[in-house]
Image (tube, rainbow, N blue to C red; front, side, top):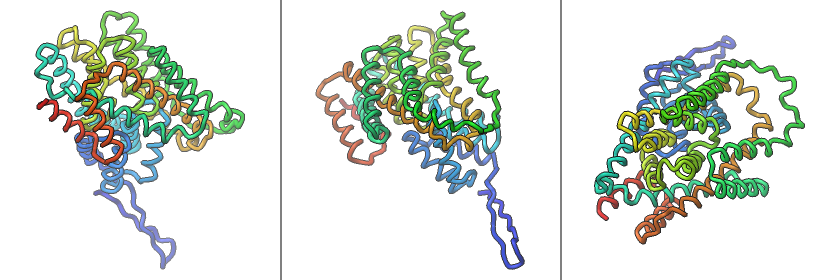
Length: 409
């Protein structure tokens, strides 16, 4: 641990010790590599690991600063834990260093989900190769039901939020389009924040803003959309546009990603089956790193009728989902301290979270519609829900147990 201690003498009889943050970039990269290979369990668990390794052991940032950055990332679209780690790296070493940290963090999970995608596609030829995945589907459904319940319990606090969630769920079920979800999320945020407009909190504020990252955010969005239009037959480009667009509109992290991906790629485009999606969803629970790595699996499996190189290009396109949140964290971190207490933002987040809960409920209902209600699947689903609700068994242990069961039954 590299901590610089400076004694500041206020008087001949007084001195105090000031600890400056650790700025050893090589050591920070080592911590990121360890986290990328061991951080299971989603944003909340990731936050605890960041606190242990980056605050308590590494002293790269204070606990207060870490929690503030985590709060910022929760109200931005994109993967919360990934953005938090990127924000810490940006604070430590600037843009280039943050990009290197981002790539190190993503590498293990993206690589493993890509390999699993290839295995899934090979299983279409030789089904016995995928015996271990027999019970991943009920496990994935159990994870989603549990996450929906936990998220709804913590975020739906008043009557109007329940109404917004129910409305969003109903619309998503009867109109399963990839354009409905971002429209509902945006509408929920605007509707919820509308009462705060009269406060005019932004009047008189002078913000120091570097606009280049916001221009980059919208420039890439427009660029990939145009490329997708002109190169329509080159599907990896279109997949990259799909993932980038979703990354720009997903508030609430991995839990909100799951219903959006299901709606777009299973219900609407039908490029992957419900069974393939659920297997990928279950497998990403046992992988370290971000849940958003699921998009590499989806991109690869969506190219299942193409050759191996095109499938690999589809997997690489999945990484595009991480770019919007990265651009935004670079953009907002410069003036976050000036706006973080604004009521307008807090109310908007409440509306977005309410809609997110509704989208998750819709995803559960749609998945149940395609669920294989065999005796063994129902038993695995019920046992998984029991463990998730009433014990502290880590999710990855449940997935490993399901894989072992699949090999023997």
